[in-house]
Length: 275
Image (cartoon, rainbow, N blue to C red; front, side, top):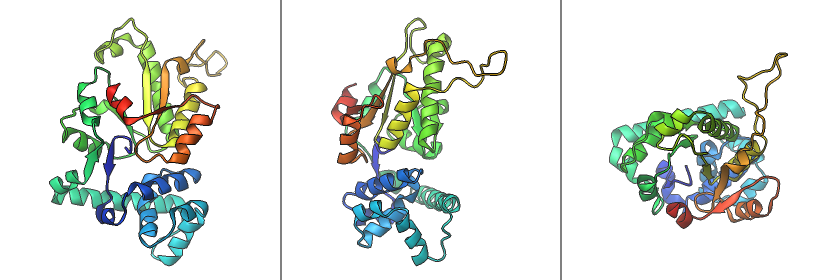
């Protein structure tokens, strides 16, 4: 995602310097609307290219999106339909580009300095929770010599899906010594999980779920009530970081640093590479 690499969206790339301005605006706008900014980012980028102020887009979203559909009558303003339509078109453009010019497509993606080396040299087990297509992520990683089993990459479109995945992973590591050993850890040690993301709203979702995890749905008492694990304290074993690079904005980093509802730490790129 944004904390892993800087990527460009096809022919829109040349018009935004840096392109992250449009993506960051899309993240803020669409997070307020309950969506991921990745899909609507091309619309926001197009508006910025046409001279719209990113702050004005944020303040007037979703009315801005509604106006965009009026100006583009071939689009239907039905959020689920529009989102699905955009996903299909973005994926088609990306796959067509990948098939016709693989080297050019790979060259349009740049990993942040030191990230690849950190992934290759870490002794920790690595997992990816991504809103992107798993195959696309694997192609990008493998182009840099980073090879991961498919079960280390999770499809997670929404922030709450990532939160659920983090909690489930922490529980699996806690309760399955054989799984810990398969990942290269010790069966007797208590594992620790570090979650890193550059999207503030997702970070808050994950931190909130770690603080107040849902009970495992497969365990029930005699009358059908879900059983909450006794003494479960995920906050002591799961650390949630907001990446200060990538698409996070100055305002988001300030908000993360002063809020006290959940435990979130800021993480700079040099520290990430060292850890």
